[in-house]
Image (tube, rainbow, N blue to C red; front, side, top):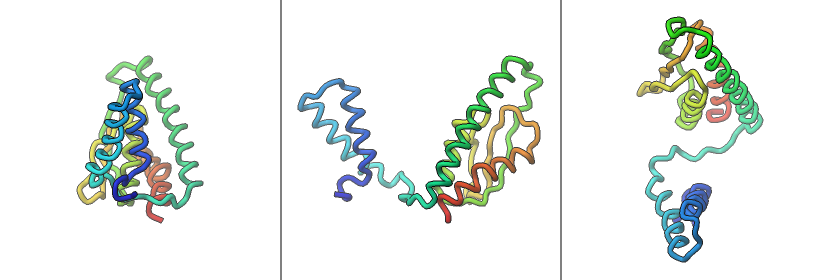
Length: 163
C-alpha cells in the first residue's frame, strides 16, 4: 500500500479537492480524482523532506500558541505603523540570523512562521544552513530580534525535530 500511496493524507486531500473543484460525482470525475490522488504523491515523493516523527507534541502545541499570538500581535503592530507613521519613519531592514538548527523539516516550519507573520519575510538560507536572511518591516533592535527568533522559534523547533 505504501508503495502506491506514499502519503495517504496528501492523496486523500487531492481526491477531495478534485471532487470539490469539479462539483460532480460522475464516474469520470471519480476516476480522475483517483488517478491524481495516486500519481501526484508518487511524482512528488522526492520533493518532500524525510518523514517526521513527532517527538514532543507538548512543545509543538506550545509553539503553535506562541506563533498564533505573535502573528496577531505583529498584524496589529504592522497595521498601527501603516496608519500612524510616515514611510520615512519605518526602519525596514534585512537581518542575518545565525542558525543552530540544521533539520530541513524544522527549517521549513521556520520558513512558514516567518512568511505567515506580518512584518517579516523569509529571504534565504545559506547553503550550509548556518545563516538565515529575514526581511523585517520595522526593526528597532537587531540583537533583540535575533534573540527573539532563536528563543521563541528555533529552540522549540530543535526540540521537536532534532531531539
